[in-house]
Image (tube, rainbow, N blue to C red; front, side, top):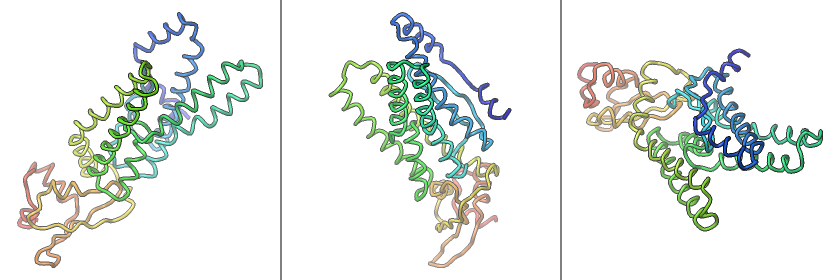
Length: 288
């Protein structure tokens, strides 16, 4: 219980959120705004509590003027099922929240208007977060689905490409149906910035993924996936074929026959510990 309650220490409220609340007071929408951010907070706590259950490293739970985000200090080496549970634990909160809304309405605590607002907010946040756009929950689930069959960097790129397509469609809808909606433009700006930032950081994130594998912070591999390589292949080219959740024996092919077999950590050791970032497979065969 203490571990779950401890997630509150990661809570960070953006200063501009208080400005939004103040505007709500001045425009007589205080209760609606408080309800909205309470729902967002519970959604993000759902992620954080699930992450704490699996002993993930939580960086921060942020409440922003236009939403919220639970940031984890994990880099793609947790079991895919475990990560899926953490992702869907946010949207699942809206199911019991809808039931709670009915009870509060029937008990006379919620007025008809407040109950309708509460219900609309829950549906809005639930469906919006499941859009296949990074960094929304739907985008993260899309990353996991790609990871079932593709390497880490390829899955990451596919996710960002489709996220960009999703934002473009969202932008088109906003231009046609609600061009003056300031909130929609703020959300689009946030999504575009997040995708652009993730793209700029993709090599760094890939290196963090490899470093965690090298230092043995995970042993939860779902299967062995041998990789057949050639002597002239560079280490980085081999690493770019690594899959999440898979352990990779490296099989060196020469003239159509198996010439050597390496453990993936032998390659990672040469790359990170010996800092031989331009090494080829044949260089390892000469010394290992």
